[in-house]
Length: 337
Image (cartoon, rainbow, N blue to C red):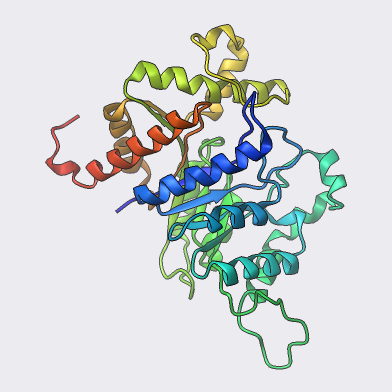
């Protein structure tokens, strides 16, 4: 059974506030919980006016406090920006507040530009120590050894599940070598997905946390009552990616009738390449797309990015996606697509 989850950035929409964005995220998590989604993750990014999840642990607590059963976590913490000991304390605290519901996904990229990296007081070479930092963090979250003089409090004995996240082969190799679950960022960097999954599964070494491979992949899905409406709603995300290509720092914009009036052919090509793993349409279109994606990747879990400007439409999108997944579980009984 393929699990279904949501990735959230707490996007600030034009005409709304940062407070609105954080509360919208919590309401979406509550909605996802009621619909049976497995987990709700937020991602660390810095110096992005439209993203409110930079203080990731605090946002996780805000969301977990408003929900009861859904797993909440980081997708992820950019570990080179932090001392492993501090992350152990933060996520140990989260686990103490919301026992058994916290996930800790770790990324190797800084999640920001080089100028902001200096503001974070981090050395750009910190990513070279990612593997050692992950293992150190895992130790801080594990049992206290006899004679151990430094302890993460809270943190020790929390055993918060650690995930390795990535958009290249490095993360797949590391997750396999140490027996971690693996998440691939195919929702914006799809190029190496198939190769990364093959490496991860082919070289996986069982661990106490993870006895067998477990692969999560990111996918952009925007669902609506009709294909035309979904394509219209998706122009918000397309504009965001066009702005990224341009290096523009804009808030999330309302959808437009014709996206080709917004981007140039070159911007369209670059943005569309990043958005290659996107399924946009009615329930039937989404069903076909998800089936094809699962058949191709055999993913254990899909982490959905369903960003629309209108929050009612966004909640409706995740409803349709959840209903589609329920149908897919019995897809052998459905007529051939």
